[in-house]
Each structure stands twice: as structure tokens, then as C-alpha cells.
Length: 312
Figure 1 (cartoon, rainbow, N blue to C red):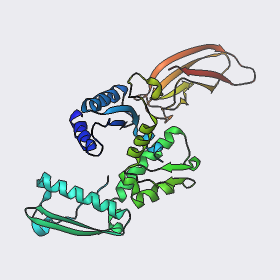
Figure 2 (figure 1 turned 30 degrees about the vertical axis):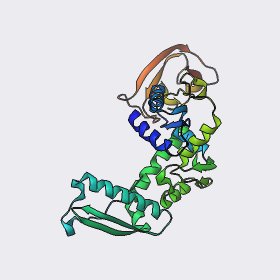
Figure 3 (figure 1 turned 90 degrees about the horizontal axis):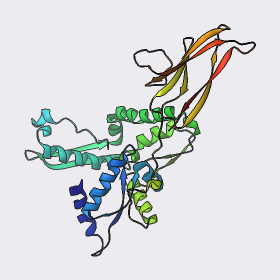
Figure 4 (figure 1 turned 90 degrees about the vertical axis):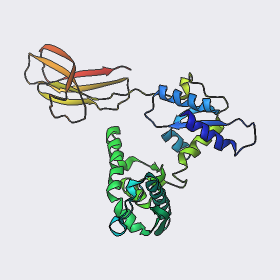
């Protein structure tokens, strides 16, 4: 990473006056650990940057309010296969990326690559309709993680007011349309180029900071502990979801469990499972604890209250 940052430092140095202190904010994926963040910051500092802070990419996108087209099969005509040449494939991917950007605003794009393979030029016109047909399966794959995230958070898509699009593929019209249809009551925020959104957010954040990055400043970044697996209670063969996965901790939840016979002893199990499905599956359910309630009597209410507490 230090070699990469040194290259970036050289590029940045040519754009500013000599002896200018190059201060930067680094953006990392959301799941990066503190150790990974520190290692990245040290690598940038070794390259010559003054690192102000390391923030996550979603935060950078909020601060700022690649599919690529598969090439048509020409092997049958020219008896050539660009897959055999890494240089040819690099040219093809770069040209496809340019066409993708053009088709975000235009209805057609012309792809031309000089001397793609063994001196043969490549030329092809692609329409937006053809491009959208090629990526239709990939569009569905993009919306699936959104639906999963909403399900885990327990949020209805109609409760979302604003949606921020980030990343190069987010400016593809069919992607924007698909996301817009998922959130019928929301405003789609796409006025800023999605390609530049994270970098712009990091630049804005850097302008607010005055001191260099201190890895010991935990108050600048918070890691929120969550329940990694769903917690269930089971009594009298009834399995009830108590705490869904990804719930922040500490948390306390109280559930009522039904009684079948007065005066009986009840075994209440606390189980951990990989998903929120309340079906009994002994292969995936892992018992975390159990409590025996002996000689439980009732007069009117035929249920008991059991509380589950998880501390950080």
C-alpha cells in the first residue's frame, strides 16, 4: 500500500505549489477493523501524506450529498481471442467502461480499440437498450443486498424519505430506475456525480479538520457492537424470536411464554441461530443457556414473562 500511496503522492505533488503540506482523509469500506484503518493510515503517512482521519465510505458519501459491457463475440469472424492477451483485455475493459459512462447520458455509444489483438482493430456500436439487456441480471443482484439490509434493520421501504446513490454504476439509468421503484416515497439524491461522491465527501471532511490524525482518538470513530446471530427462546416446544441479528447491544427484551398446565415445571432455553427463521433446526440452533422454572402456578393469566439481557 505504501508504494501505491507514494505514486498518488507524486501525482498530487504536481498539482500544488512546492513544499505544500498534503493533508488527506482516507476512506475505507465499512467493515474495516481498527487495526486495518491504522495500517492504512501509517502506509499513507510513510508515503508523505498528513492523514487527518480515516472514515468509512458511506460516511464520505453522506458528507458529499463498475458493470462494464461484455464485448460481442468476434472470434468466429476473425479467429482471434482477446482473452489470451492481458493487454488486449485491459484495452477492452477500459473501452467498455468508457461506453458505460457514455450510455449513462446518451442513447448510443461507439466503441473503438485500435490494434486490439494481433493488429486487428475493434469497432462496435452499442445502444442503451442493448446495454440494459446485457446487465438486466446484474441489476437484480444489486437490489438484493438492499432488500436484505432493510429486512435486517426492520425498516419498510416506504418509510425511507431520501436515497443517496454512490459509486460509478449508480449513474446508470436502469439502476436509478430500479432503486427508485424500490422506494416509491423517497427522493433520489443523484445530483453529484456518483463516481466522485466519496472523494468529495472526504475532501469536505478534511476541510473541517485542523489537527493530524491521531490513531488514539476513539471519539472520532465509533464501533457499535451488535448481536451477530439471532437469539430465540424455547419453552414447551414453542420457539420465539427474541433479539434479531444486527441488534445493537446492550439490549433487554421481555417476552411472554404460554403455560399449558398449572403446577408444571418449565425449561426455558436460550438459543442462537444464523437467521431469523423460527423453524426448529437442531443442526443450526446452538443453546446458550437454560433455566428451569419449577411448580409454576397460575390463576387467571396462562403465561409467564421471561427477560433476555445482553450486555456489551
